[in-house]
Amino acid sequence: MATESKTKAGLGVRLDDEYKTSMEAEIRLRRISYLPDEAKEAEKETCVICLDEDIGSDVMFAVDKCGHRFCRHYVKQHIEVKLLDGTFPSCLQHRCKSQLTIDRCDKLLTLKLSLMWKQRIREDSTPFTERVYCPQGRLTSRASGVLSTTCFESSGFRTCFKCSGSFCVNCKVPWHYRLSCSDYEKSCTARYADDARLKSLASGYRWRQYGKGQQMIERFVGCGRIKC
Image 1 (tube, rainbow, N blue to C red):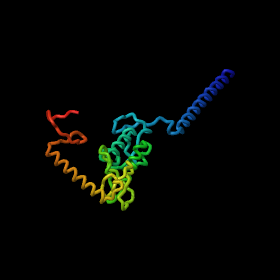
Image 2 (image 1 turned 45 degrees about the horizontal axis):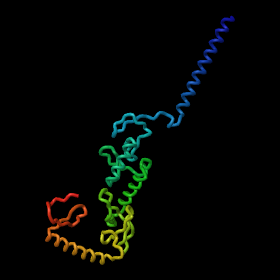
Image 3 (image 1 turned 60 degrees about the vertical axis):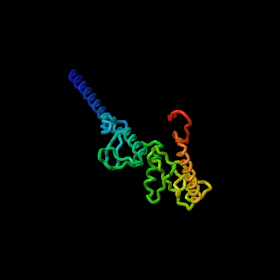
Image 4 (image 1 turned 90 degrees about the vertical axis):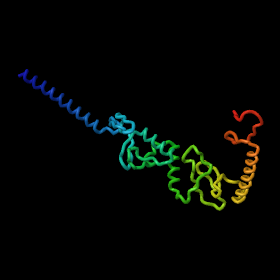
């Protein structure tokens, strides 16, 4: 009887241990299931642009309107290229016409890109009849013709909101200080007449313009080649 009691007691202990072990395992599983999303291992996705198949879903970017997803690195590069080209960035998916929005892409933008995008929005929202292009724009960028949205004044004075340069909206030239538009036009006419006389004189003496500065030179002796 004593042996049988010991056997039953030992069996009870083993059953209790197994029950406790199963309960602890279930509790651990429940704790894991309730962990926050960032604590779980991120799912892996494939970027159709760089073809990387091991990208975490937390570093992928989804386009609002179409739902296409790409890695953030290439989306940022795409935005920069489009803005520098003078256009609005669109979805990277082939033939998809969905447009990216500045609010959705805010976390991907540097300060420079953000200002550039806002500038494009501002330009695009200005009616064609009210657009005035700055004559001092640089030729190295397609966005060099910067729109000035200051109100139209009788004097024609405008300030470019990109380069801060002043120009005359009537004459389409940098601002002519202390000269009215008519006086400036007269001075230009006189200057063009002087230039015409100089060119006529240069032609008679066979002078030539040289270099980027187009300086007028005359050859006395020697060959016709000039080396700086």
